[in-house]
Image (cartoon, rainbow, N blue to C red; front, top):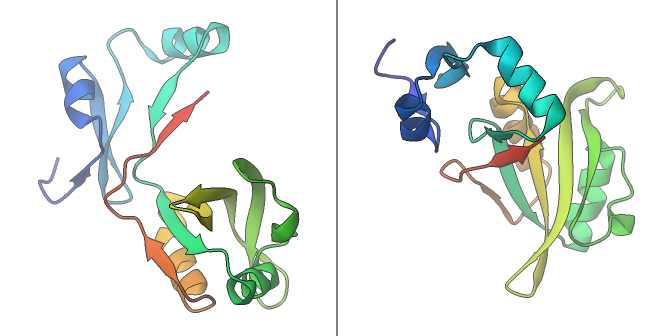
Length: 151
C-alpha cells in the first residue's frame, strides 16, 4: 500500500489486532480482521461496535444569526430548533434543491459559544467543505481530529 495514504487515529490498534487494510479516499482503512467479516457483523448486531471514522469530513461552524440563515439555504433543517447536544441527519443541497451529500449536523457548546458540528462523507469531503466555507463565516475544518462512531 502506498506510503502517501493517511492513517486514521486508531491505526496502530488495528495493526496490532491483525486488521487487513485497503485504500479508501486517500486513507489506509481497516477492512476486516482474522475472525472474518461475518463474525464481526454478528458481534456488532448482538453487542456493539466502535468504528474509527476519522477520515470523514468534520466542520465546526459558530452559531451566529448570519451563519444559521446561510446554512439553512443549503441544509434543509430548522437549525434554531436543533437542541443542544443533539444531532440530526440531513443533506447539503445544490441551488436546485438536489442532494450533494448526506450529513450529520450537531449543535454543541464549546467555551460558552454555540456551534454546529457537521460530519460529511469522506468521498465528498472536499466538495462539502468548499460549499460550506463559501456559505458561512467563523468556521474551522477539523482535519486532525479523531472521530469515533458507536453502532
